[in-house]
Amino acid sequence: MAAEEEEAELRLGGPFDRRTARLEDGVFRGNAVDLPEEDPRVRRKAKGFEPEQISLSLSANHDSVWISWITGDCQIGSDIKPLDPKSAASIVHYGRTRHPLNLQATGSSLVYNQLYPFEGLQNYTSGIIHHVRLTGLKPGTQYFYQCGDPSIALSDIHFFKTMPVSAPKSYPKRIAIVGDMGLTYNTTSTVSHMRSNEPDLIVLVGDVTYANMYLTNGTGSDCYSCSFHDTPIHETYQPRWDYWGRFMEPTLSEIPIMVIEGNHELEKQAEDKTYVSYSSRFAFPSEESGSSSTFYYSFNAGGIHFIMLGGYTSYDKSGEQYKWLEKDLSNVDRTVTPWLIATWHPPWYSTYKAHYREAECMRVEMEDLLYSYGVDVVFNGHVKNETHALWTWHRNQDLYGTPGDQIYIVRQPDKCPTGPNERSAEPKPAAADTQNLLKSATLGALNLPRSIGAF
Ligand SMILES: [Fe+2]
Image (cartoon, rainbow, N blue to C red; front, side, top):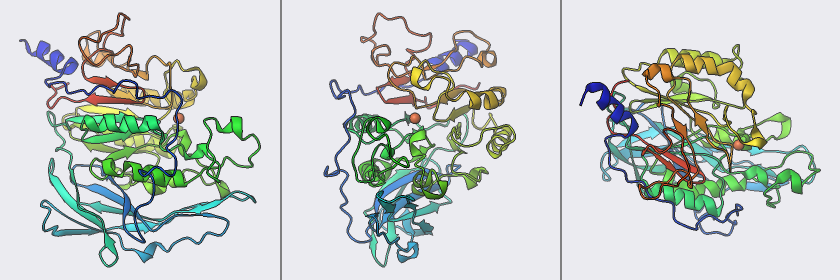
């Protein structure tokens, strides 16, 4: 096979066996139904200051990861007393073997509040949130860890695997891309489907818990503004974040998640503070990637450079995010990370009426810059239901010099079957049936071949 043909083969099909797990039939209920607070998967089992809601995030490179958890219970009501973040230490014991865990790292802790300047709304204060960064890790290596305060309580022993080294032909085997998650029965199906595909990394492109669809008394609604016309501020029921953290812990204590903010994370409160829960609960490699914000950052996952952009902070050409993006892009070495993937929450292109051209201003500011650096794929969330494509990256054809390289990232299971015998009669976009895309109602996963030819 000629080198060019071989390269095209690698790009389109990938030198890998498909192991895509189908979504179970009949699992979706139509309208989203939230998991109730009495569900055992979201109830607090930790006692006192035992660690809970453990999660992993990547740092900017393979040699470092973040471990986060919460100790102590949250409070909600009119008379809350924030916990002292110093009352439980932030320590991780870790190592390449389960016994002994001969390395130790320490980190920092914080408590955040969600406060309302009105009578009748219930204020919230979180448990103590701990973030610890492990450094000096080897690539593609399993590590065991235990987190907490050794003088109070430590977690069970968990394990994770670091990303492969950043280089061509060095990729995580599978990455799950998910957006608009919530905490509904549909979410449970999505997460179980995602886990059955054994991803090495989860990228969450915004809209995490939908806690802002609840009043502070815990009353929820599918349509907040339909049900509650006159609330003085858009309330948000912060315990839903704790429920989400508990539900996700079995997954996120083993598989790192990288999150970018969506509109549901805005959660306005007193003094016009916004995005406080999002910014407090997750660890971001902002500092490691030269960003001064939790709203935008970048990281490497093997030979992929991920750029996480903020659709709800300034994206003007004169702003900090744009300047950071210019610098980050100029530092990308495509001989080290051949793939360049960008994500943000609201798509620039979509047929979805409710959010049509909502992010047009961001597109006008940033598209040329991303194009000039040859971004390969963009993942977005936000649009739901009948949209035809989350993204078509139609502008970088000239990089490849061949037609038909248009990449569609879609999530219409009826039009994009996962098996060779399940193809519908519907015509599909040129590359929509490439075997490396997996679709479900709320989840798409891009299977990356272990080795990809040079671009
Ligand atoms: Fe959204």
